[in-house]
Image (cartoon, helix red, strand yellow):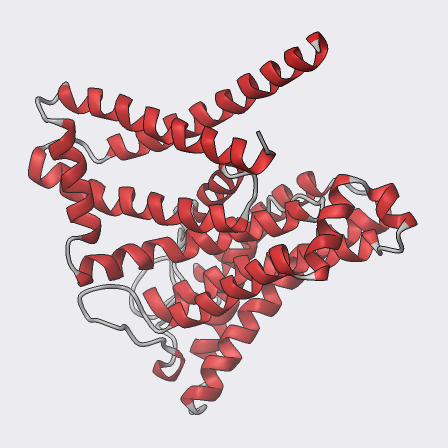
Length: 345
């Protein structure tokens, strides 16, 4: 079985098993699994407004998941997407509360560009240290996460503290910088079009471009890539910068489209969820898109599950964790079986 199809099979079976276990857990609350999953689907996709809300929940997870996927594809780990998201979000908010009177189109472009630049720059630091001095990028990106989060915490409780109370946040950004909501009953806003363009570019780069092939070769066999004339270190650094830009874009859209200000705790762990989803699908960009949507459906529908059937919405998180466990176990078993067959052959 080809690696891609083996992975798809393992993921599908694992998710199905997690749904079965989730169904049994629903029965402890005297709820039919069929009714439970029906309520989840209704709560996430029951009408266009719910679909909009589900897509809004999906966007930051998708962007951070692709952020992890594109760096790994080039053989470098970016565990710092959370910090890149925070720092970019704050930078955009600081811009939006400082300058006024700028035409809306120009301000939107300036805001997005600022978020991309900050996210990319914050990822460039560990990327450069990795390719230049062989500093461990995992340690560096984790450390820079804390630096970014605590820096924004200081700024929103100090120089950029809101004038509207003690809330750990900035003031509301200039309205010219807002991405307008597509519908007032959901958080989905016109920033989704920027996200779609970004996702399309990443999918093209990873799957259909020469650069994506060079990234893959650099990860799988750096020595062979060097002999083939591939700039391995340059490709790693470029992938790291793009990775940071995607995480920065996630933070940018949260400020310009969802909250219209920077908030402490603006991300409830989007990058960690995105990382887990990317790992589940072996960092395949199409797989990240699919799993991000499925996760958003489950998370959005979990509230209706609790409201209608009195089943705690935390059950959705249990199903998600179980699917990760089953996927991990599935890969381990499949690899062991393949090794055993190879030894016996």
